[in-house]
Length: 172
Image (tube, rainbow, N blue to C red; front, top):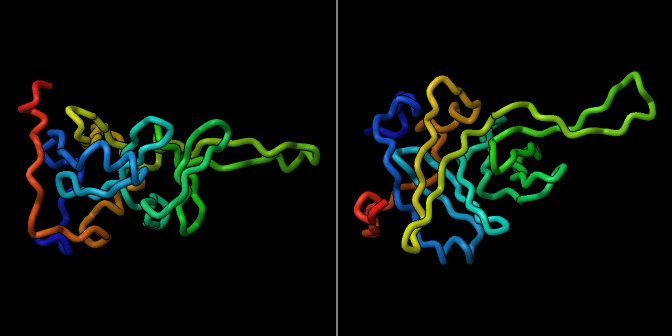
């Protein structure tokens, strides 16, 4: 497949099986990693004892989320895009912003949701390995889908892949 000229819709890919992306101990050390799962680039975060996976490019302008910082906003852990400082929740993929009522001069800014903007994916840990299953919820379009196409790819495929256990053969 020519990744530069791919027009395949990421949501119509038939393969929705889990893909092993690495060892649990490695991501715990680095706190994040990038991977290609069924031709889709993702970033996996390990934050406060939990794993989170999402499309690697920010929904707003395709910023590299794997280079962003994780911060808490209104009690929610968010990745902050390094390009334009957009805040995306790790658990739901919602975009957050602060708003005030312009007619109330004493108003305090409140955190609001823009809705789900970033596609998040399912992370599973089995026998010390991390597996990611793409979230292809039918009917749900995410703004980040636009940047998941071939022309925006940032991860270069390696010609040699490490042999890792297949989740289907581990009894799950």
